[in-house]
Length: 209
Ligand SMILES: [Mg+2]
Ligand SMILES: [Zn+2]
Image (cartoon, rainbow, N blue to C red; front, side, top):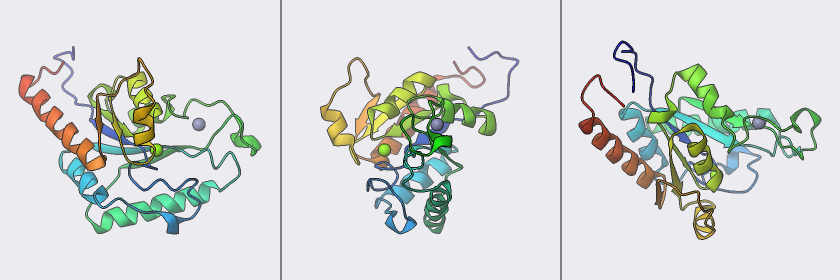
């Protein structure tokens, strides 16, 4: 129960996986020229912007720990994605990634960390920096680990069939189950907007549970 004295509303968020969800999965993405949005990506992000979601990219980028590319390359890729989205009037509020991997070759990144999905570190960062409430939020991704992240933070988790999604769907990870398995990001956004509308109708103003 939210206390009645607590009128401050934390924001709801959609945590978006990057590769295979927001953009085409192309293996280790080491050049911004290889970024390819899906045909529906801009519409999907813009619809979430309009519905007042914070949109937070959460991405495992172990290619940094493995020495395949630098953090500067990832920053460039994210600037490029931001520019493409902006040209269609869409915006992602924050771009978070984990550069680590325990078996990495680059010493400073070769650690067991708290931010590699399905660990919850990137979501916790959004709670601190963007004041989001995970319990009102959603995680969308093409891997079971994205759904696992949703479970870890008390959000709802959607698996998309783009990227590795079809393969993942065929490889069930019982008892882990997604709240929905949908074809792609735009279908995930439709599902989210529908479910939020239902929830908002059912909960009287000022008493969100
Ligand atoms: Mg992915
Ligand atoms: Zn990490």
